[in-house]
Amino acid sequence: MLQIGSLKLKSNLILAPMAGISDLPFRLLNRRFGAEFCFVEMINARSIGHKSKKTIQMLASTAKDKPLGVQLLGCEPQYILRALDVLKKFTFDLLDFNAACPAKKVTRRGEGASLLRDTDKLQSLLRLVVRNSSVPVTVKMRIGWDNDTINAREVALSAEDAGVKAIFVHGRTKLQGYSGNVDYSSIKKVKSAVKIPVIASGDVLSAQLVKKMFDETGCDGVAIARGALGNPWIFKEAREYLKKGTVLLRPSAQEIAKIMLEHLDSSVEFYGEKVGVVKFRKFFGWYTKGLRQVRALRERSSQAKSKQQMVEIIEKCRG
Picture 1 (cartoon, rainbow, N blue to C red):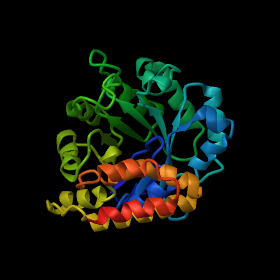
Picture 2: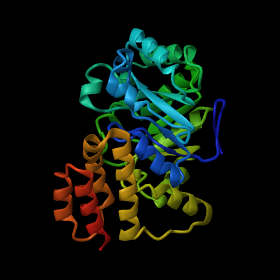
Picture 3: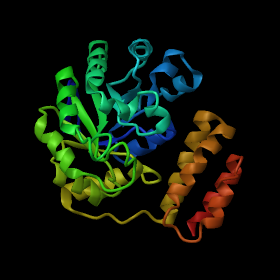
């Protein structure tokens, strides 16, 4: 079990928020395979404050999509307060504040991982969010800006003092992005420093790597992001491996095709055919990773415009 403030979770494996990925169809599919707690896509405080149609659609949920968290990106108090006011109209169980996004378009605005270079400002923003949120607040951070300024322990202690109920920490610096090795020792130092739960992430791409993250860091939970792309089975596989040491067989081409069809159906139902097919295209590449003789099918999938076209391509993956 994992407890974050008043939120009690049966599982300590979490589906992390991913920009352009973590929509309702994706979340519901991963929940079927054991992702008890999920996040909507990262929400920009400015965009939601303006009630952008696209941003509001990102917040769409259903009764089956619970418990659910939202991750907020921002650095300006007035926009953050406006965003929090809008979010109160939705039903979320947890609010995560992003101090981890390494994208240049984010950090050049002083948001995301750039806040790791101004810990006083980050703490001030966290206090603001905690005071104005009706649900537990957490923070997502990286271990530092670069290898010369690794300050994960200090940032975590500052965040705990601000009132957050858990720390999500990615084991790389901002400058690393998603390359290079995960620094397990820095995550372990965060875990040793704070009394609140620590949820770790970074390169948890298989059940074995999920276990390694727990073993190397002593973390309370693991947030899975890229490991779930085209691979909702990772939650079931990780649970079995952690509990019994059992390595489950990878799904067959038949099973992968079946899940792709279900994901496509859900995407089309949610967005409509035109947008739903376009949204699904990128997932086809992830689902078919490791399958034989699919290069030509991937090229065709990137051009598919109708559901029927995509269905025909998926059927050819059955082998």
